[in-house]
Length: 180
Image 1 (spheres, one colour):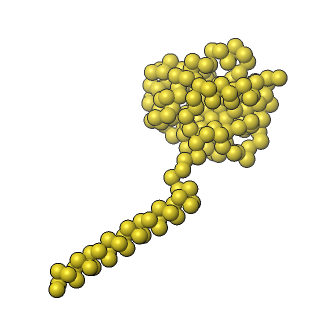
Image 2 (cartoon, helix red, strand yellow):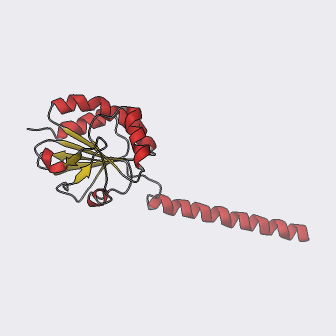
C-alpha cells in the first residue's frame, strides 16, 4: 500500500512539473523569449553622434571629418564570435567602397587593447579602427555586439543592424546609403 501511494505521488509530482514546464514554455513563446533581435533594427536615432577617438594606428578619428560620406559604423570586440566572421568580409569590401567615397569605422568596445590589436593584426584590418571612450556606444544605444549603423551623408541614420552581416545584406545596406 505504501508503494502504491508513493507511485501515485510520484506520478502527480511529475505531471505537475511537466504541466508547469509546458505553461512556462507557452508564456515564453507568447512573450518572444529567446528570439534574438537579429537583422535590421529600429533605432530612435535620426542623426549620428560625433566622436573624436584614438585609433589603433596612433592617430585620432573625428567622425565629422567624414560628414559628407556615407558611413558604415561597426561596434565590435575581439572575443565576439560573429565579429570573427564579419571582419574578413568588412576588410574585403573596404577598398572597393573607399574608392566610392565611403567611410568604414570600427569601434572596439568592452575589450582590452592588446586583444583588440591582435584581432586587427590577425584579420589584416586596414579601415580605421578606434577605441571607444566608454561613451560612444552609449550615445548610439548599443547593447550587444556586433551592431552596425549605416549613416547617410550628413550623419543621418539610415538604419541599425544587429548581428552578423552577409555579403549580400552588407552590400544592399551600403547601396542604400550611397551618395546621390
